[in-house]
View 1 (cartoon, helix red, strand yellow):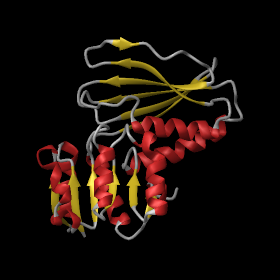
View 2 (view 1 turned 180 degrees about the vertical axis):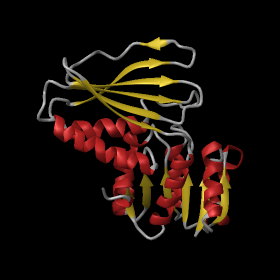
View 3 (view 1 turned 180 degrees about the horizontal axis):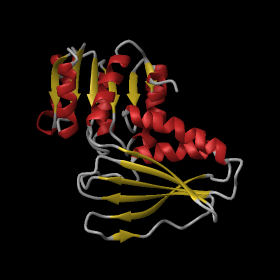
View 4 (view 1 turned 30 degrees about the vertical axis):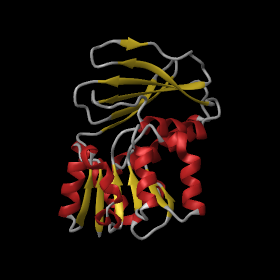
Amino acid sequence: MRIALIGHGKMGRMIETIVRERGHEIVSIIDVDNADDIESSAFRHADVAIEFTTPQTAYENCRRAMAAGVKVVSGSTGWMEAHAGEMERLCREEGKTLFWSSNFSLGVALFRAVNRYAARLMERFPDYDVRMEEVHHIHKLDAPSGTAITLAEDITSCLSRKDGWAKGTFTAPDGTVTPAEADSSDALRIDSIRRGEVAGIHSVVYESQADSITLTHDAHSRQGFALGAVLAAEYTATHEGLLTMDDLFNF
């Protein structure tokens, strides 16, 4: 399989290593210093482009890759909510292909399945309130994380006493704490912490007056995310439309 990489930071370089280990070919690497190479014949020769950049650049990257006739796997977060309708239209009406996920880790896919099951159980027990916390490295730009939002949306789809999610406190790398948005018992609160080089910790806490139950996924490194992105690219090469981890792992 011929793969183009859009974004060549820590994640991009890790993905590059796994791509080569799995016997695929890298035909183009796009980064900030050669962004216009996305128009090149080398890039158009790719079967799939894997895009890991920033919330500010991901939308345009995906648009340009699709315009070049290349299928896209994107793991950039913080942009999809604003452009989901357009991405759905491009895939449905113009035959484009985008595999997007807030998190490509197999462990997180399993965690999402457990999270949905727990929420369905807790629908029967209103004494338990629910909140979330996510911890990431100091370089992460968006908060809450895309994975936290996805987990929260999974919960609120199963738990009728929560009608959405809200930003909780934000703890910056220097320890400064930004207060939560207006508190509402109807919203699932997500607290965010930026600390060190943490790959990603997501916790869902159910709490009553009697006790608490905590579900946690703790990523030890970015390697699981990188491998999942390559598995998604392998899947995307033979599938079309707007794809998600639910297509790749049908739990």
